[in-house]
Image (cartoon, one colour):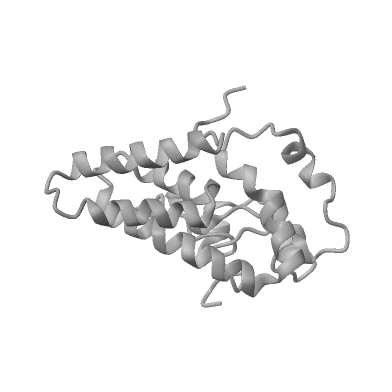
Length: 186
């Protein structure tokens, strides 16, 4: 665990994909170590999910809890949070319950690899959050298609143009699947 509270910091107790969050890839003081990662308590001192799940019950995620979904998830059920990747909380926890942590982490590792590839090759300084949201919400097969499209752009030397074309490809795929990659403004 290396100073962390959990074994797997890329998946939140609550089901958030920490490994697909922009703050996980931020440089400097505002970087987030992921759920229960080293120095997590300094960044998120009042996380009720970590307190209940990890500290009190010794679990990795709420999917392992016999009380899941408890009242802590009421706001998630109502969709009150504008943080787009919260849309994956329940599907992620259900995937862990159904297929196990190892299977979930394998798929998440693929998503993280694609995300890192997008950031490394196409982030022009303004697209990291968009790539994170895309990698959290789109199906893996669609992301792999977009990754192949990105590779086809290797001859482009203009990073802004490369980013624009990849973003258009991702937005088109999301639109075809009726998946919104925008904040829920309520």
